[in-house]
Image: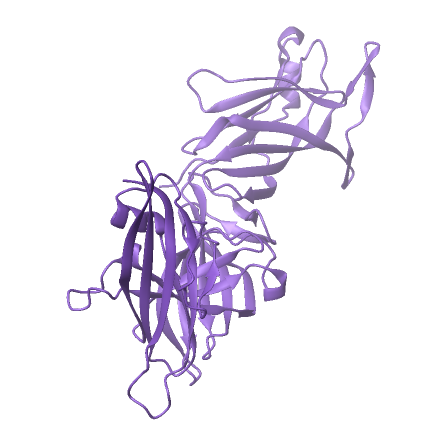
Length: 419
């Protein structure tokens, strides 16, 4: 179904001017000046700002003829009528345009072209502007408005090198137009980066490559989170999933850092060493501000195994209803990879307190004990009650089927818990 276009009506009928009695000679503008320029700004996820430039011919305003009337009407288009603005920009002289000047009128000053008032006719998708013009002229105007159902979404294609140390990241924007309006050639801007000239038709989808980032450094991480993932199986009740991610930092030093990376689906591939690519999976990337990390989920690791057991659990009375809970957690880790790996173990101490003490009033107080293994590096990015324990794992010995376990312990005391 073809939708009626937005109409900015401007018809100068000199004959009509002379046929109408002077007291009723208000000029009505009733034709369609073509769009000279269209800009579509997609920086808002819910609404889209459209700005159009048109050349509108005006007659000179006078007490007898009145002012010009510009009628803006639309049909089957999802325009927010309260957002519509009309701004005169410049006056054409010959084949060029010049700025609008101030002129003297009745002892005062006013713009050569100025919007006097606007009104909405009842029951219509239309808006009327009353426009003063000091003399007959052609004026460049900008009409701007917010429109719905002209939307955008973002996606990525990530290709890691064979060694999984760098990747090529392509960032795409997809424009979907079901707004009821057909724009033709327009300047499209995502809110960051470059602007693009594209033909934006009604009921069309357009995909644009916004940016290609090459040789971006990545880290491949392995994460163990007992309280999120739980037991691996009935046969392995003390083991849990080890999840893999690619982590890249949105910073200039990492050949990124040009703009905050928007949220969107990421399809992940890896070079197969024969000139092709293998599909690894897909994930939904979160908004990644400048100098922040984007984590891309790759799936479960089959070649890194970790089991978690409670080696000791003791309660120490403090006073009244308060007690401390002293716990030693033992981790047994096997790395079946031919390369060294670094495992991050997320310990959620609030959950530990609930499980072994029945109490967790907000974030628990805790202190590290002397029996904690020296091989553990601690990171508190997730918060003070959720430390991440990093353990470096040696590569699988060449020519050997058996892998030696890396065993480490986390000794801590949860302080001032209620009985």
